[in-house]
Length: 273
Image (cartoon, rainbow, N blue to C red; front, side, top):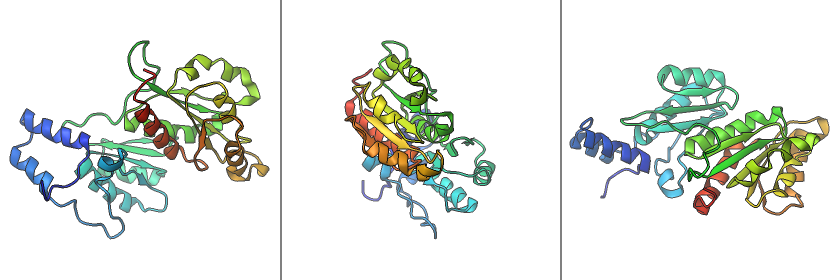
């Protein structure tokens, strides 16, 4: 219908269910569907149709933005999409967002904010954990070389949670104690995708890719001593992996790795369920 705004499937479903349940009138729903996407903020031009086009909604990258800017962007996205994820959020930005939207959740380790809202809104994600055998739910393993890599891994895991994917952690299984990784082989081999997060020399991705028959998304982290050059050494190691089936995202880019893993799992159609 001409003039209707772009709205992601989840938000549209929420609106229709609210009409069906009597919480929203037909007129109110039509008004929400027909209203403009909202004023173009002087500092942001929001893309409310991104989820429909790409399957991934617009996510707020908080670095470089003021707390006030993030609050306004969150409000606009919530109004039209019903839920929002923000990454790389400082504690100051998180306080400002949660003051305005108390239903939000801030993960200090991953530096992510998730806010759900609107009639009939469902939680942004699902609890982590290995699905019961025969449950029909595929999963993504997020693995780290060391404990210091966990903040980047948690950014990836919480992004996947927001996107509705099932995840399982395999943290601190780096090659310095290879038995730790080998003890998780059954878990790894059952995954639809593995995200390997590692700093230092970044060897984890190559070793994992030699153990599994699924795609491996490698995330170099900036963790390491001086000659690691802020993650450049791990990045180059992962790019030069001798094991096939490894794709590499940028240094510390847990969010980007999660999007790649989500898209791979969607294309595979849950064949590992």
